[in-house]
Amino acid sequence: MAPLRDGERLEVVTSGKGQVEPVSGPLSPAHFSYLKVLGKGGNARVLAARKKDSGQLYAVKVMTKRQVQREDKVENVLAERRILAIAAHPFVVKLHYAFQSVISLCSPQSCTSC
Image 1 (cartoon, rainbow, N blue to C red):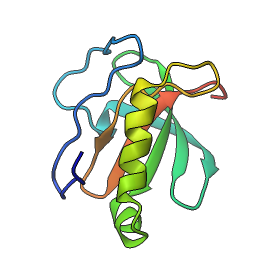
Image 2 (cartoon, rainbow, N blue to C red; image 1 turned 60 degrees about the horizontal axis):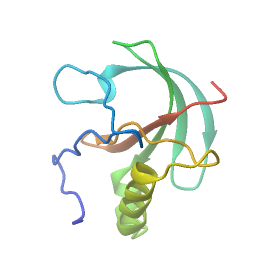
Image 3 (tube, rainbow, N blue to C red; image 1 turned 45 degrees about the vertical axis):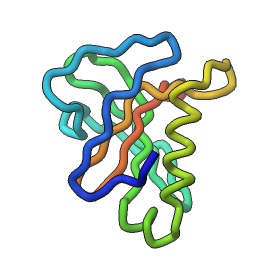
């Protein structure tokens, strides 16, 4: 998978069961109401968010494109996305979506502590 260019969109990523939740138009950060910061790390922030159309809670990992590119972690981020999209294990969070804005990469995941 090639690195993403500015303005390029990621497709909706399904859960391990192959089901996609309905959304109108391309998924974006605007489809979520952000509630609180769950944690911060070296590369990302994790936010509790509620999807506006379904009310479902997610933990959304947000990384800035600039920092990912500056630290040469593009391949790591893409590998994490691929692994989480296919992983089906009780100790691995389920990746429901992956999308980006002009500035950030976002990956809403199952939220057990929201």
